[in-house]
Image 1: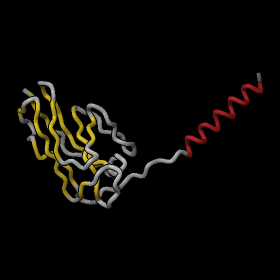
Image 2: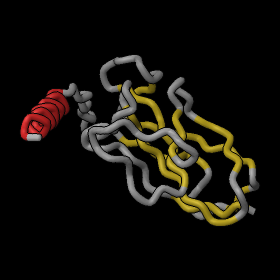
Image 3: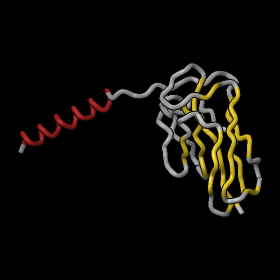
Image 4: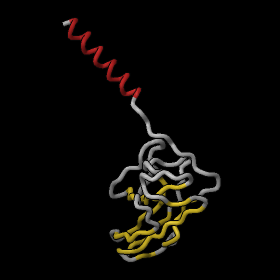
Length: 144
């Protein structure tokens, strides 16, 4: 029994050492003065169930995911997200965290009737938020 416990303890300590040595993705510094914003729709707008969202970016360029060029990133649209993605981790990809990794600067959304929030976050080539994070002001829209 002592040998079994010793073996388990060795495996556990080796596993935690491996986790500590796991590589992490680098965080890209945001250039001073860079901004991401929603061009349209306007905050407080009433829109149909299918509508276009246009993305704005100042002080940087857009490049597809996986392409590393200085001072570039790609858009992620956060729909009804209350807590921003975790710093230093890839932005999730799901029905509320929409990725535009081909370098798109607009999209057509289809949302259910009601009140929704939209916010942009710029990610680097690896979908990691910049440091400091480049996020737009959250806007509220009303879908009829």
